[in-house]
Image (cartoon, rainbow over all chains, first blue to last red; front, side, top):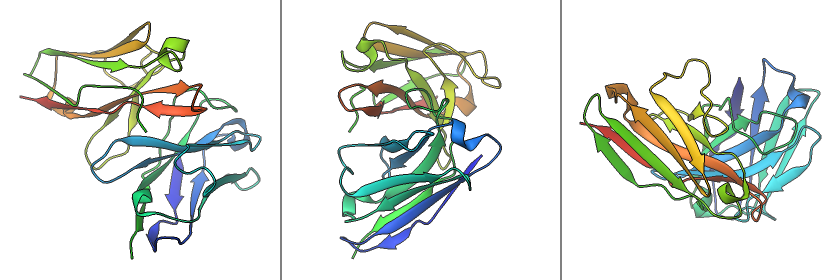
Length: 118
Length: 111
């Protein structure tokens, strides 16, 4: 399973760091992903990180967000900088099916809510 | 942004069949990337219904089935049940974007 934390209220231009704790599988053997869902909207892929730590980003967050992982502690992080109102969303952590990205996502966490507002 | 197009909503009576389409392009579904389907009940996290175009995970009822042809894919629900009322999303990989893409989502209502 995966469990997100770290969401909350942030001001435009501010920063937040999301965390995702994984358990029940050999963490380093799976890529991990962040997917967000704005209120009342659909799913949007945000970022992926391979088992070896190679990051990938959606254009909407490239240059502002940084994804990383700690294979020793089964954790993945999303450092969110220069936040904008349009980053307001429920952020899900989800596991890939192999060490690299490109497959389906399962399991998903319950999400952590990020609200960017002044 | 969503680059996989789905109908915004569909409805059907109990026991009927509904089919949700997912239309992509030559940089994702048409390039041969697999399509996966998720169900999201309001207030809950998405869960995978179909993976790699037509495979059902254990625990998913047999009334859900998937197919893919060219740049499009479909999810069929045969014998609609009240508990199938939810949002459904397709997902694939896009080589131009270098990451995952989701469909625009379809809200299924059971009449």
